[in-house]
Image (cartoon, rainbow, N blue to C red):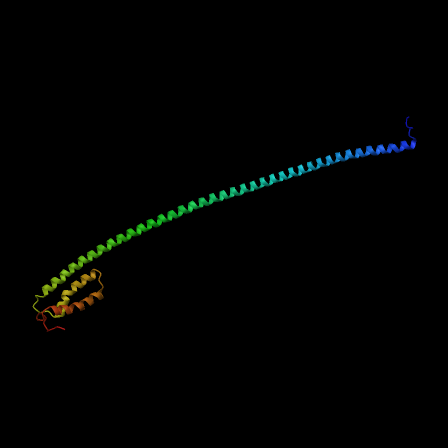
Length: 203
């Protein structure tokens, strides 16, 4: 036996229930879709942020490399400049050392030449002194034979004055020669016999 058809109030009550069910499904679908869209948007925004950050990182790296290259170029240029200055300074010092060595060689040569000249002068004076010594000895030997007519002082001066002048010509000091004269006279008086020295006119 068939069920009786629903009345109008029952129909009105059944329709909202279906609509509400469909609305729930729609809301569920929309919610799922919204969540997907939100997730996609989130991923998209994060990707944009990551790309922007990567770009900034790349810019920082490029800036760093550029600045580093500039500093390296300046440093290399400065080092080359320093090396050039160093080379010039070393060359300058080497030239000065060469000049000093040359001047030292010239000074050494002058010292050697001066020593040679002084040796020659000393040798020449020694030869002159030897000649004077022979004259003195010869004069003394000759006057040992004198017969005593000259006073003692006159005899001594007659022997010594020519020798004194010769020594003065050789560069000897006069005060030293006078002192030599005073020292030589007692030796002459001591070594010569008293018989050849007349007392008349003596001192």
